[in-house]
Image 1 (cartoon, rainbow, N blue to C red):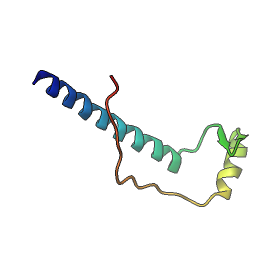
Image 2 (image 1 turned 90 degrees about the vertical axis):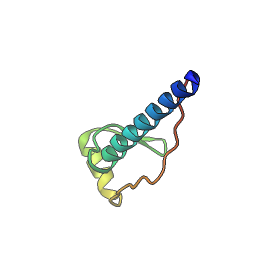
Image 3 (image 1 turned 180 degrees about the vertical axis):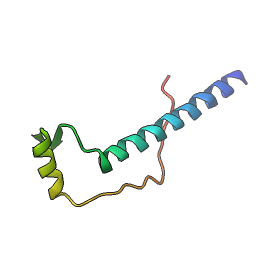
Image 4 (image 1 turned 90 degrees about the horizontal axis):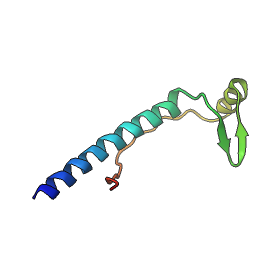
Amino acid sequence: MAYRVDFKTHADQSCRYAEEFVNIYYDCMDKKRRSTLVWNGNAVSGQDALNEFYETLPSSEFQVHTLDCQPVH
């Protein structure tokens, strides 16, 4: 029984961490686009180049409906 409780605890933690990661990741993708980007094998870096690249893309808004995660032993 202790193993089941321990596994459930780890599974619950994994789900919380996965959800937190997804929220941070897509928030950055939607709003905070500042980094080096590799798109189809071509690197785009520098604030001006990134701004120009992102301006050519349509706006986005991600909505996560499901996610799957498992604890790693």
